[in-house]
Structure formats: C-alpha cells, structure tokens
Image 1 (cartoon, rainbow, N blue to C red):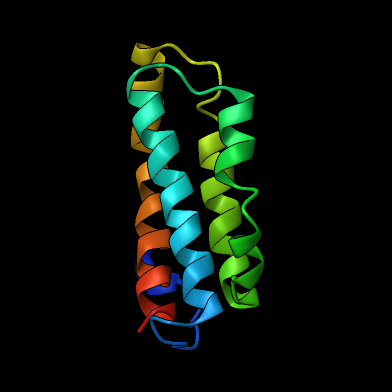
Image 2: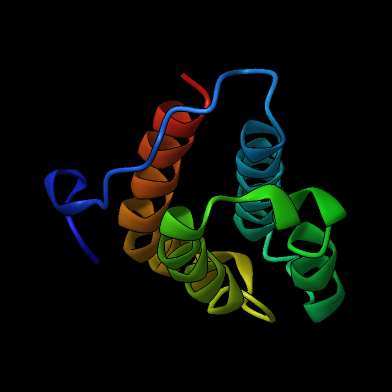
Length: 108
C-alpha cells in the first residue's frame, strides 16, 4: 500500500464535478463495507452493490489504482465474522486513507 506521500497526483476537478461524484460514491461504498465488517456481515452482494454505482465511471484515471486497492481490501472482508473482520480492518486502513486523500484532491 503506498503512503499518502506516494499517491499519484490527481487533478482538482471541483466539488460539483462528475469526478468528485465518483470519488464520493467510492468513499460511500468503502464506508458501507466498513460498517458491515464491524458487524461481521459483509456479503458478496454487499461488495458488488458498494462498488457498482454508475457514478464510479466518473473517477479520474489517475485515481483508479487507489480505488482498486480499496476494492481489494473490501473484498477481503467478505464472509468474515466480526472478530476476523476486525483483525482484517486494520489492514484496510491504509487503502481507506489513500482513498480519502485522493477524493479530497479530486474534489478540491
């Protein structure tokens, strides 16, 4: 997982842009998965629903690897009970931090 200093630079598109809407949808999906993981309730359907919104099509190409890392981290939570998910959530914090930083940059 790259540190935030190693993140690709992304263009600022502004808060009202389709690119920002895509990044916001990605953050919402990641947040939903995290909340379900806390309860040990992430299903494959939850994962697919979190990351299939048409808004994701607006994500800038430079942000796609960051989203891919978050999706991989989220996928690792599918089917885990609450205790196992809690242990795994620590591993996904870097991906989430990178997604947040990238969304901030895109939406500025």
